Image (cartoon, rainbow, N blue to C red; front, side):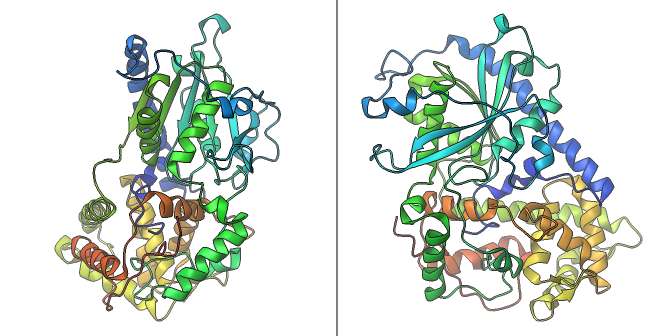
Length: 463
C-alpha cells in the first residue's frame, strides 16, 4: 500500500486541482477534468435511458428498497439540509454557493451492531434545475480514491454540465465516504508536521528507506488513536461504504440507485450492484478497476503505465531545445535518475525554507504524469531540479497531498491508507520486496538505485 501504489491513484487525472500559479498547466488540467465529466455523463445519458427496462436479478427480492428491520431507524431518518458553511476541509471556495445544500447522514459504524456507535456521512446536494415534474431522482457521485471527497466533486460536475439534461433532471449528490474529509469520525494517522516530513511513504518513493516492523505496528496504533479508535479502522472498507450508499439512496427518496463512479468509484459501484442488485437503477463506471485481479498484478499494471507515460513525456521533452532529460528519449530514464536520485541523501531547500526530498519530488513527478497537459509543468520542475531548485516540484506535490498554505493537510492520503488496508491483499515482507523489485523492472525511471527491502505498511492491521 501507499499513496502511490494503491489501486486508486492511477486515475488522479480526475481529481487534479487547478494549479493556480502554474497557470497554463493548471488551466489545462481543469479542462481535462471537464472533458472527463462530459464524456462520462454523455455515456450516462444513454445508460440511464436504457436502464429503465432493467429487471431484478434472478433469486433476488422482487421489490426494490427492502429495509432490514434492525436498520429501520437509519433508513427512515430525515436529512436536515442547510448551508454548506463549515463543511469544507481543504477547498472552502468550492462550497461557496448559496444553491448548494449540505447535510449529514447517520449510519452504524458497524452494521452488525446497529445499536452501537454511529458515523456521520457528509453530503452536498446540487438541486436539479429543471421542472420538478421532470425530475428523475438523485445521482450519487464518487470521483475515486479511495479517499477523495465526493462533496468537492459535485460542484465540478454541476459547473461543467450547466444546462445539461443531467443537471436539469437529477439532484447531484456528492458524499464523502466514511472517514473521508467532512465525514466523521475522520481518518487521521499523521500530524501535519509528520506529513511535512514525508512520514507517509513506501518503498517506491522512499529512496530505499522503508518502515520497520516496529514502525508499522506504531503506525497502526497511531492511526487508531488519532482516528477515534480501533473500531473506526475496522469499519472504513468498501463493503461498509456501499451499505451507507444504500441507506443514502433510501433517505433521499429513491427506490433505486443511480450512480456515477470513476476509478475506485467503480469498485463501489460493482460491489453495490453485487450486494443490492434489486436496488440498482443505472450506473456509469468510468476508468474501471478490474475486480478479478489481485493487488500485485494491478500495481504492476499501474507502474507499467507510469513508465509508458514517462516515455511519452520524454519524447515530447526531447523536441524542446532546453529539455532537461536530453534529446534522446531512449536515455531519458537514466538522465532522470541522475537528476533525482541525489535527493535521497541531499534534499534541496526551497525559496520559502521547505525541503524538497526524494519522496516529494517523485510525488510531484507522478502527479503530472496522469495527463499530457501536466507535462510542461513537470518539465519545468525537472529543469529547476537540475539547476538545484525544487519549488515547482514541491508545489506539484502539494496539490495532491492536499496541503494548504497554512501547512495543514487534508486526510485524503490517510483515508487511502486505511481503506486500502482493509480492501487490499496483505503481503509478507518477502512478497512486498519482490513486488517492489518487479515494479522497478517495469518502471525503471523510479528505481532508486538502492537495495530493496520492503514491508507492507498494513501488516499490523488486525482486520
